[in-house]
Image 1: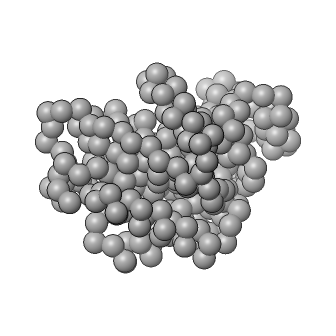
Image 2: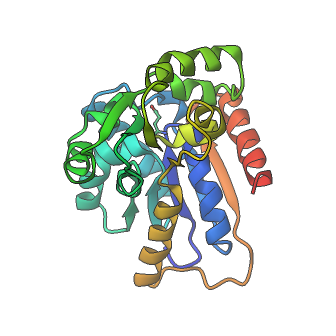
Length: 257
Ligand code: DGL
């Protein structure tokens, strides 16, 4: 492993591509190996022990490719496995958490909605975060929402109906900010924002995670000096159709930049 080695990034599926997008733009000389564990998705409705075992397995695959750092581009994987991985591995492990801290700065007497997986919201890690920044936060678990993104279904009547059921109860409330606490939901930001008055901040943790990645690589002397542009490789534990969705979303995603 050296400064030219790729950075390993993983998620249960397509959500992590929203992090990869930011990473490619902030770190253009770095190469990335993205692993979508679609064969074992979703993570967010599994137990801590199940998620930990799956993440260890995915990390094993990335380490076989001699990556120089691991990015858990998944709030659920971070909540359930980051602590253990940091104890077990000598290479940097960068994780992410719901953007509750920046959201709490938007508080104006209303509520802060935190949309995330049941696993993230019931984790000890989230309880600790929430005890600092979550005084006005309301948890909104979204089982089944990541599956829309996995199917590449970013605009459909079924998705609108799902979001309507989920968010209609908050229409009559003052929502000061909403947090997208799952990387999949970043692909649905426009559809979710529609439920709140124009200008309501809808926040995610992607940019902060990628800045942290850059900082850690710099501190460890692991930044790729360039000058070549890095490469991106995408793998999936799922089937050919799963991989096709990943590659398509990644291309669309880059085009959106
Ligand atoms: N993308 C993941 C997250 O950020 C989890 C989705 C899932 O597998 O349930 O939490």
